[in-house]
Image (tube, rainbow, N blue to C red; front, side):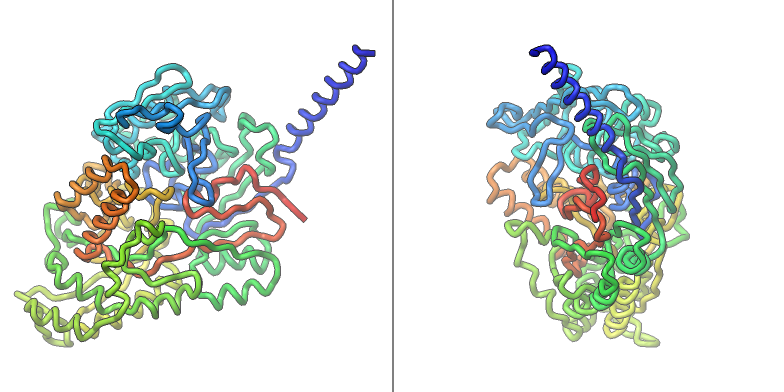
Length: 565
């Protein structure tokens, strides 16, 4: 009798296991649309959100952030802390332990050597890594054994969670990228387009700036996931078409970044096929000012620190541009309840939000004109100001999007009232936010005077984000135009604040330093914040498991998505 019961129990366990395995892929085909199409599947070669999020289906970090901004172990067994012994008492080292049995999609084991390699890849002296600030102050990364990695810092790091945490800093496979170090990185097309990962999906086919086909990863660590066998990730078009494809026609299951006027979305929702989801995080629409000269005649040296900008180097001009803008009206026409006027590049969490710059919330065209008069910029023919033969004539670029083009038109009008001539340019978002170092149209290349886009960061601690504007982070030919210091700002005093925050342990002191950096950038008017934007996306009513996350990849829990009635 005992033997029979044992056999029955064994059979039940077997059947349950088989059922779990059968659940993988049982929901068939998932269709996602991002109207900004990814240009690469390597997040280390692009600062664009679209590339980071597409790659997150395949590449994973040691830990990431949930929808509440809490850090959660992902490929690691636990998040190391001082209390559990994972962070050294002198705060100069953090030790991560990988989960057991992890495999790459090709069936080979993920080991600590892959983690070490990822650091070497992003910090190679001859390469350009768009996420290099994640590895600030790292002195060494060592594999203590097959599953244990120790990161050692050159200074005490009270917040040691920059490296390998969040969608912006995933682990890549050493075997696949071994010959892609340094200047070779952009040329490794096969690896960059089809990275081998540990995530729930693998790339089956990649067409840059168009469509990505994924299949369920047969070696994913949870045998019951993902529920979908295939994913079509369509890129291109515009935000209105993406929203319509989910909310009205039902052609797609998920649409990202619905940067549309509130009344447009409200009308689409009436079709009853989808749900609009939104949440505030750290996403700020901003104008970035080029402190270097983008003149075509400079050739390879255009938009580099070798040549200061002929008039935007004058802080009076930059300040006047900001003063002329009516941020409240921009929010009203562009975002409604999904936007808030802001004077900060760091709008959240609340402890980091500065109140020192709130004067920008009131448009002041008379004040802007007075400022330019006092700085010697005199009106000439057509009312355009000039000084010493240099005209205030701006090329203002952004990605192609109805809301952004509305913003451009309004801002051009306001700037004309202060004697600034403006030429508008819009570029396909797939190209503008792409990582092709050969393209002259990327936001990193910055071959214009000012440009507008939105940006944010992983998690709730802004240390790595504020380090974006370190002198060394400026894109330039030597880094294959990678780097997040897009305005080419360089101030040793700012770099000193970055170093102080890296060593600061008390939350109050970290907040003080972050606010100070925010205020330096904003009060130098090298970045002109416009709107604190909520994330707005939509999903089909038949898609379950979606949890909007503004602190990590929006697709962070795609392994849990499923089809519902």
